[in-house]
Length: 331
Image (cartoon, rainbow, N blue to C red; front, top):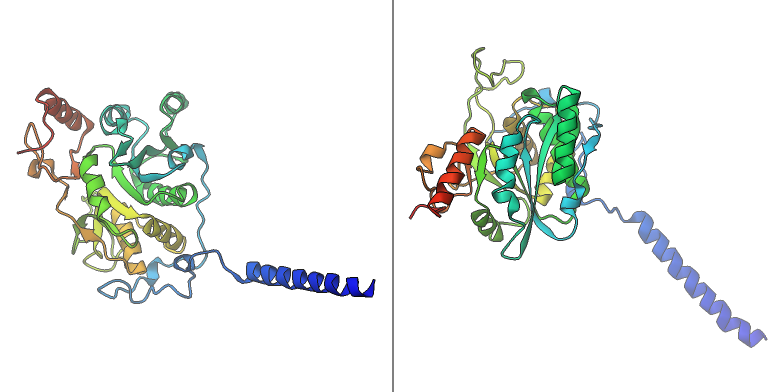
């Protein structure tokens, strides 16, 4: 009996030691990626970006958490193996713009074996009748992320930060995100081709504004007082018509945004976060803020990815024209 007890005791000791190692490993391994370990102590607000800006006036002493509910949540758009998610900023009243997109690029689900998801993002309308119509639209198309705050132009920065939060939470397998507006022509074939050769991490690209001026004129829509922004120029930022981000950049923007006061100009705010993160956004001539520079009546420059049309009606007419002549690109 004594001889039998010895090997049993040895086995029990071995199992016990193995379990101890496993438990210690589980307790000591931090599953949070290093890039997400942001605190007020390791963020450099005093010397940010290539120009070494002091941004301490934007620092929040307490971590800000976005606590808005999703009234409509198309999280299924991120399930599976989606390569790209296009998040189109819209407004509750822009039904025609959403219809134009659904009937054009919205029909495309896959290009070159890359899956593409597309959703619209907006806040709440200011009356119950419009809310009922919007929720009915969401039920029909299942492509609306509806956030529980009243929509409006001055909410664009908040809307974008919540978009990044939503993407971080629900789109864990999506490699790239495009944030765009509902009056932008996105040529998906060119976009996918562009992304196939793009870096998988640290990537931010679009129409880059260098040395963007901080306007003081009170008649300018996006003016900034000295208190709001004490410098004559902004750090480099990507114009809001369409920006392309790799997944890790979206996550890093979301994480750092909790420590930074929201700037009222949305694309500038993202540029400020780039500066704090040490991310250098890349300019691409394939993004254009003026459609007249990239398109004529019947076609657009063949390599274009994103073109700003300004109004849904102009975009709709352009799509009708090129469909009539069966032509999408200039020769």
